Length: 387
Ligand SMILES: *Cc1c(COP(=O)(O)O)cnc(C)c1O
Image (cartoon, rainbow, N blue to C red; front, side):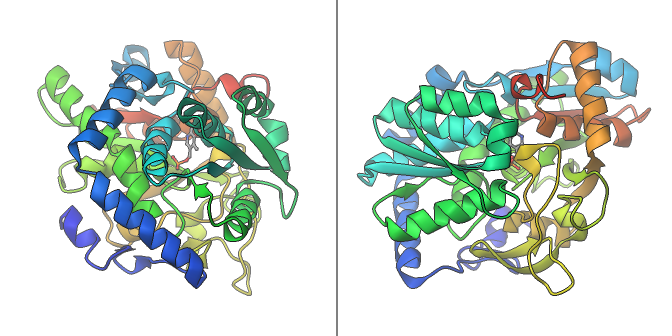
C-alpha cells in the first residue's frame, strides 16, 4: 500500500470520503481543491509557508525524551512538542496553510468552527496576521468550558458566535458554520480538522504532515532509527494524520490513536466513533458516525472539548478498515490521570485531549522496552482551572 493508492478516486480514501454537499458548495470546494493543487508545490507558496512555520509558529517543534515518564512506563518515550507551537497546539499548522490559500483566492472573510477553542484561536491569529475579517462559531457549552480561548479570540479581533442547538458542542458549531457558509458564499471556510467534504481531509492532512516529516528526521538523528510506534489522540483526526502521514508506508512503525471513550463506551456517553460508529454520510462526507437505533447521528460526550465530536475524518475510517492504525478508546478518568501524571513527572501540562494519547501509550507500552513517540498535540493551560 502506498499513499497514492489511498487517493485513487479523487476525494476518497478507500470507500470513505467524497463530497456530499449542495451543488453550489461543490463548485466552491472544487475550486478550492484546484487552488490547493496549483499552489502546494509552487516554490513561492512553499517558501512563505515554511518561513511562517519557522518564524511565526516556532517550528520545528522539539522532540523531547521524557526520561521520567520512560522510567515509569518501561519504554523509551519521546514527546513531539506541538504544545510549544504559537497558540498552543498543532492547529496553527493547518490554519496558516489554509489562510495562505484564502489570501491567494482574494477572500475577504474567514469563518471557522471550534471545539476546545484551539482552532478558533489559531484561525483568529492567522486572520489577524493577514488582515482578514474572522468569525468563529463555537458551541455554547464549549464556550463556557473553554472561556480563556473565547477571550483570546476576541482579543485577536475575531467575532465569536455561539451555537445553542443540540448539545451546543463542536457538531453544532460545524452546523452553524456550514449554514453561514451556504448563505455567504464569498466567505472562506477554514476547516480545523481532517473531516468534512473533499477537499478538506486532503488539504488538512497535507498541512499537518509537517509533524511526521519532522519526527522522522528528529528521531533518526537522536536514536539512529525510526520509532517502533507513534501514538496520537484523535478528535476529527488532524494531529493524528499529521503525525502518521510519513509513516503510513513503513509497516515497521506501528500507529495508534486514542479516541475519547468519554464516561463509558455507551452511545450518548462517549465520543468513541471508531469503536462504536456506523458508516454513513455526516457533515459532507461518507465516514463513520455515532448514531442511535434509527441511524440518526447522536451527540458525543467527552471531557475533552477538542475530542467531543460524533464523526471522524474519512481517511481514519479507511485506515481502520485496512488495519493500518489501531484505534483505542480512553475514558475521561484515564485521561485525567495521565494529565496529572505528565504534569508531575515531566513538568509539562498537556491538553486534556493530548492526555488521551499519553494514557494509551502508558497502557500499550508498559514494560515493553519499545521506542515510542507520543504526539503531544497541545498544552493544558486552557484546562487547569477545570481539572
Ligand atoms: C483540536 C484538538 C485535538 C483534536 O483534533 P484533531 O483534529 O483530531 O487533531 C487534539 N488535541 C488538541 C490540543 C486540540 O486542540
